[in-house]
Length: 134
Image (cartoon, rainbow, N blue to C red):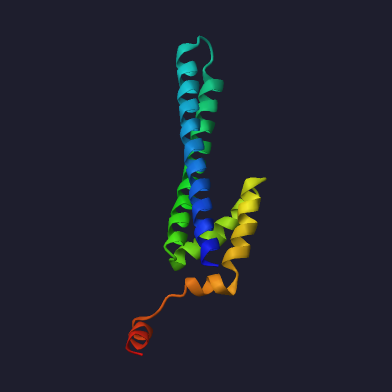
């Protein structure tokens, strides 16, 4: 199951990178729409509104991409917050057809398995000391 967790971490990192790239491309489109709004004669409202929408969606994509990339890195390091974050993001990814849905289903299948759950158990200092002395 450890190989599945590592693969899931790589997939989350890839999905996060795609989100960050899409966010950056939308910011470039926002710059283009802003340039159109400034250089055309007449009412620049439509181009300005389009630029604003591009910035809003770029921010959402960048935030989602960052979250998925962070989760992917945490999963590869077997940190417990990474497992919790991946499960929360999987619920949101269910609605991103088709790749987000596939990633979400794989996330649920991997992280809800008992063997994978054992990889993310946080040991207390007392438990750690007992296991090292035994």
